[in-house]
View (cartoon, rainbow, N blue to C red):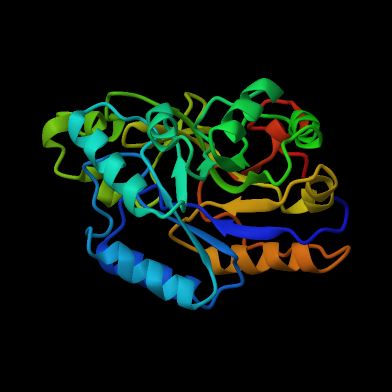
Length: 296
């Protein structure tokens, strides 16, 4: 697998952005050096980054620009309405689907899908089971060390791609509660979409004033941004096919170009902007250490 061409993917927007900002973001991706773009809502079914009729328009523009489009689904399905939305997405996706909840895997079984990072796939037996049910790509859970990813990659079913979360605030957990609403003393069912005020989430600081976690609605993320740009050679050697970059509101075009340079130029040192978010960069999970650690 050494020397194979790695692809760049842009993950779904994990925050509630204004409609114009989201449309401008996807328009810019049409000209960006990325191969795959994931669309849709993963965190909260109440959010409407774009309206239902907007998504086909965005997908069409991206596909005309040569991008592979994949529709992502919720990571935590709790209500009948959310199940109905999931069924519609699966039935209209044409196999361009990322499953982030086992309900999606069960409903989509027999049709091709991407096994998303929020599914609990940690061993060869589970990965084989997913492939037998239609998985064509596996996005490794963010806490898996590279040694485990490499071992699973070596034994993977023929044709299964491996994708790694290479840049962005790490998605760590989901809850039935909305922490962003709670932080403003608002009930979840009458939140006023307060999360729209935080295009990269709310950073939480420890008592000694260190950035620790990020609140993003019902999702908890790391405060630090995972950045694996210095590990491209190791990821390629481990058989990883795709690197995922998770959208942020600032400097994202520079992030894309830095990763593209790292992928396409042997020995290249990626030049990144200084982190625009509190917490700096991290890469500890890749080495089997605490995720917040950073080798750099």
